Length: 197
Length: 255
Image (cartoon, rainbow over all chains, first blue to last red; front, side, top):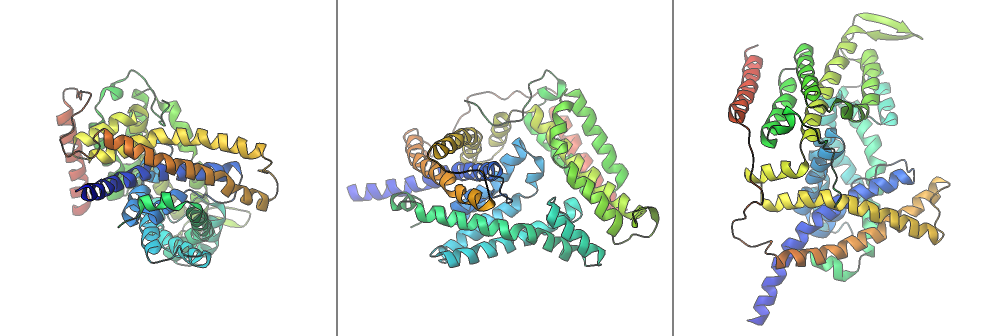
């Protein structure tokens, strides 16, 4: 009886733990961006929390973290981020699935995970960029590339995709590596609280 | 507790309208120009939004939101003006760079549409406290747990950013360099974010226990602390907005 109750309590706690992780992961996204700006790093680093949530609590929690992250950003900082909510959801799902497939075992695999996340993010963002901005991303280097490719008559979707990838690849690899280093540094007594059975 | 929000307190007609009606308005105003992508239609919706913002006495607060996308709009005009696929009619030439009418018109179309999206959302965000918006959505079927998560994000972000500056000061006091070459600055990132993530995750455990003892996961029906005030005529306004959207859809399909 006592054993049974304990088990129940644990599974009870688990779902609340996972839900409470979501606001924290969104806070980590925000602070990651804040630190990147303070240190004048040439990257956004604004999805560390989403990826970490995916690694810790699985694809669904990662997806919800990403989605709510952009809704809150849209409501409080910049309405444009609503449109990119789908991208954040995709990042959270990818991180969660790949973590379960064993891509957070070592640094080499974490880098591969970063590349995959960058590619997924690019595939999801590009149609949004085309619908919303005619294919540009707002990043000077990426848009310069977009201009060059368009002047050479490359199709819009390819030029826009490469524009996005040029920005996303370094950013998402760095973000994933940071999330991986943080994850590896967490004590087991914390990570075990979020793990699925 | 300080909360994250762009809400501006004013006494205006727009402020009195209930959040749900405003959410429907934003949805209709944002979606319509994408269904019916003509320059004049987008421009008139933008004008309507601008007038409503004027009515709500919050136009000044829109400027920082718009300036956020000013540079990208400028580059859209440059890039599309020169390289848009259907470019034919030359408009003018500077430094051997030719700009075309078709590209400029296309750039104007997407820019106006983007500004329209921003203005419509600004109208909602600047005149509605986020807490009321979330509550209004929970009343209409959004899960209460999702409502809790969104509420707590609004409170956790100011809390974590103040913790962030404390950690920054502490690490600097211990001799960590945050200025200098790119590599020095990259190296500073993990010592800054690591402690913050750690302390926040430890807090989540405590918070989840605190929530559980207050019946967070209890299966009973939750009630609301405040009563919702909906001014008269809002139901008709909502129906009108949805009919407008339907009309745009029909207009597009028959054209």
